Image 1: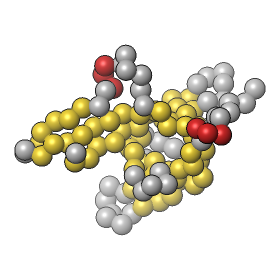
Image 2: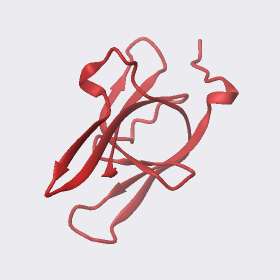
Image 3: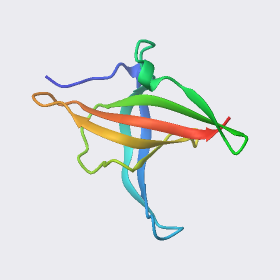
Image 4: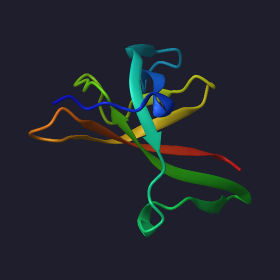
Length: 113
């Protein structure tokens, strides 16, 4: 049985990897990745959106999860998921469900609020 995302929840993203040494070092890992990006349930206190002050500047942090319709083993922790609106989410965890064809990416967005 294949994992399917309902058409109204599908989103196509691009996964990129940035070099930590070269400023312009950016490599496309996967394009047109079909996934569903969802925020965590309210009951997960450890993953709620947080705001902290760093030198007086409010930094917002939000967590979400991406379920991939087709697993892509090239995607690694530290990569970035680029959405169609230009926003980027950092991959902080990759889970593959054994016995099924589902891959889950744990994502983090961090920015000035």
